[in-house]
Length: 192
Image (tube, rainbow, N blue to C red; front, side, top):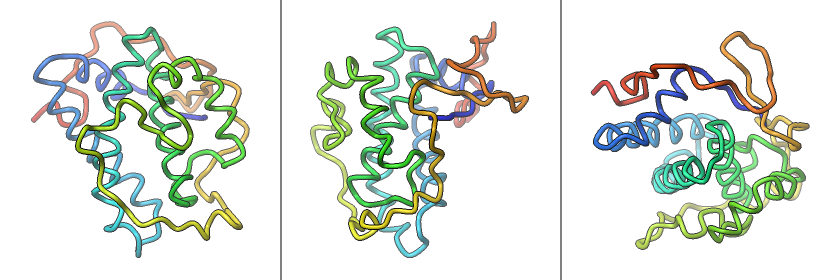
């Protein structure tokens, strides 16, 4: 998968792993991810998906932190959450929201298989043990889109490693090094 990585991603990592600040950043990061992915969705389906995405992305914040704690890099931990999202989108037939084509889901799963297996995550159960006890909001599926998927927002060919586009527009394998003195208040919502 191809991700971006800049100082705000490093600040979000710092914020999510810092008491008090993490709660504020988490809420804003969930809002941000919901907004970004709803903008990719057909307008007619956006509101019906909002609560589901809010709940889903809130749960992936926990998997992100767990991946960091397990020793994954920031880019890898973030990619894990994006892969989980793509599993969920695929299961719902939300192909227009996917960042990778459906035929690359298995390859992405295999790259993080140890983490996914440890936490009960599968393509069919993208949250595994990170699913909240109360569950997540339902949203209507569009399974017909899987019959002739277009994946208009998916970028193919990046299934073998984590690829990161830097602030300078350069694509590097594995991500960038964490800058010194990362300020968690640069994370979305932390300055509130």
